[in-house]
Image (cartoon, rainbow, N blue to C red):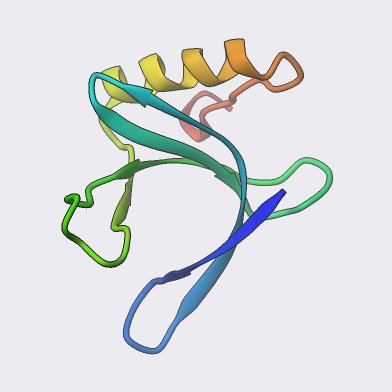
Length: 89
């Protein structure tokens, strides 16, 4: 599992492990978790980078329709995961 480090601010970073990636409608998405093993917090991130950018720029997918669509794709790709929204808990 690939580990990537994100710059959260100028002085703060966060490490995540990439579980899967996909492309929908010309946009790249990655599914990341904060734990290498076990049940961890998962996020779906959308790549906002342009081809000429030297570094990737990601944002958390927050639009409910987009999130549901991308989550459904990841669930089909990885039969051992199920997404649980914090709002639905």
